[in-house]
Image 1 (cartoon, one colour):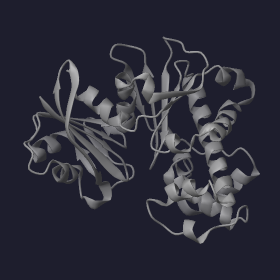
Image 2 (cartoon, helix red, strand yellow; image 1 turned 90 degrees about the vertical axis):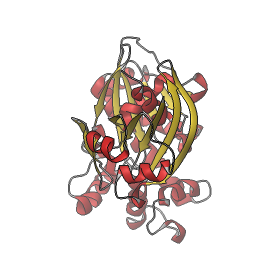
Image 3 (tube, one colour; image 1 turned 120 degrees about the horizontal axis):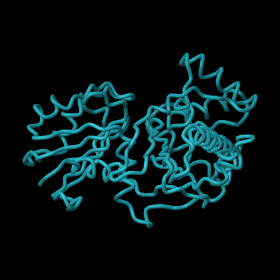
Image 4 (cartoon, rainbow, N blue to C red; image 1 turned 180 degrees about the vertical axis):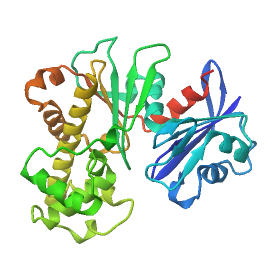
Length: 320
């Protein structure tokens, strides 16, 4: 059986074509990345990837946004997706749309120990919920409950309200509110959030800006993060961003009592969580007043496999 899977984000759509069976996730026939904004729809992006290849039997598309009754309007793209329309437009026998962090949660089933790095040992309850959190173009969140297969609760937890912790973050909230109205956690803990944080700290005189890190562009968050190794201002911005990330993850872990552990995924965490940044992240994660002992006992694991969403989409695609 040939299956098509994709992990569709606000910046890129990653596709993989596999030869699969019910007992295996299969052999990779082709894979590639398509710039999401360069296409008018998911079907258009899929056709660009498939080219002249014969239509596969099944497809599962993991998309950044809420999936309701087989439809999804992407959060960070002007796309509306519908399973029935995708089946028709792409000539597929079966199509499944899932939230991107539903796919990440299912992808944990396909990972090995080499794909994971434990940041905080903690305790793990086999009956407890696993929390998945990951910053990229947005902030993805899901909860996996123990079962066979796991029961995954998709979430839009990244759109919870941003909660400042000090006067500097009070000012950041006011800065972002003036631009966006309501300010969600995703406005802060995401790639665009890192760029916004840099602008705020420069405009507030907290750090000295660099011309090379100003302006627009999808690559700007990556440039800011890379500059932290040599630019003092970028380093301070990145430290605050990591702390904000840890604080948000701690709030979410309290909301679901993540006794099965916290798993950090997404495109940003593996690139920035070196030993020093991990200490900053964990201190903010733990810093929850009377609930600190609970979070200090929570295992925190970094997912280093960049294709976990694709692997999870393959698992979901083969579900009966």
